[in-house]
Image 1 (cartoon, rainbow, N blue to C red):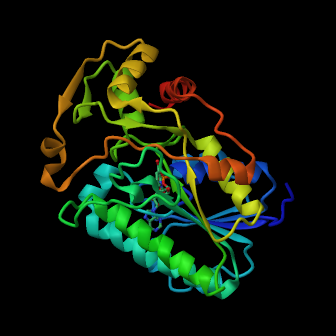
Image 2: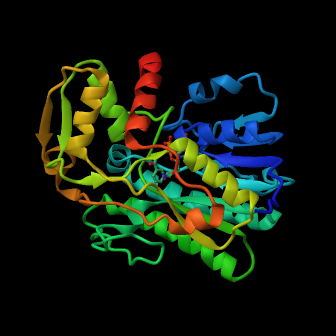
Length: 328
Ligand SMILES: NC(=O)c1ccc[n+]([C@@H]2O[C@H](COP(=O)([O-])OP(=O)(O)OC[C@H]3O[C@@H](n4cnc5c(N)ncnc54)[C@H](O)[C@@H]3O)[C@@H](O)[C@H]2O)c1
């Protein structure tokens, strides 16, 4: 495959977060010379970047994207922008609905404008949530979205990410922007926090402390989890190869029920944790509903990049347990 964009100077919004900090590592390993991180540290942590704290290639601006007045000039002379800043996590979204919505809409809008002004290509991180509760067996990038009504506030995240996709693709249509859109499916790995409702780090932390694991709903809902190292590799390949104007699912096809996930984690941690079940309504009130299944078709991204996800769920859980034992 011919690689094109040199990715020498790169902007990462949300670069102190889970995926962002793993992307920083990937880019530095591959020769990126300058990384500008914009992060308000609302869910990200400087600790995620501590391995690079003496690295002169990295500049961090600790602000909300929406509050930066001179974004257009700040973006001058960069080669690429990875836009990851967003309110993330079921718990965080339910606690901060309007703030998260505005970041996704206003924040993304001004990032798009700054990229247009400086002719910088842009990767936008959308989500599997945009498929909603689609009943299609396999979710391809052309599958119809079936998100719930606005009274179920959990769908606000999906709706705002869909707006981001429309904003970016309409500018591409007008030949004013070169966007790449990725829809991420339950990403896991080092640097992911438990406190905003992320199921894997939450269960592993509970299991390592022999505390009760609380499953929301029946536990029969299935998810497919994807290793963050694979995700940032996909970002890198898509950006490097200038695969603009397209939407790509990034995920795994291996599914596991949340009940089986909890049992697997208890077994791998050698834990005496018990499992209990709570209704979603009890946890999040009546503004919530949860898809029973969420599995992507990844044919498009695998064909475009010639790269397949590298880890099974067992391997991912083992790696995260090792990481959490050092970083609990
Ligand atoms: N982790 C997943 O499974 C997953 C799934 C689908 C989509 N995504 C998307 O991927 C991106 C990265 O998610 P993540 O899992 O690394 O979450 P994260 O919370 O670790 O990262 C988001 C980062 O953005 C920062 N941030 C939030 N609002 C900001 C603002 N207004 N201005 C500047 N910085 C801001 C946070 O402090 C954090 O560092 C997000 O856009 C998210 O919607 C993630």
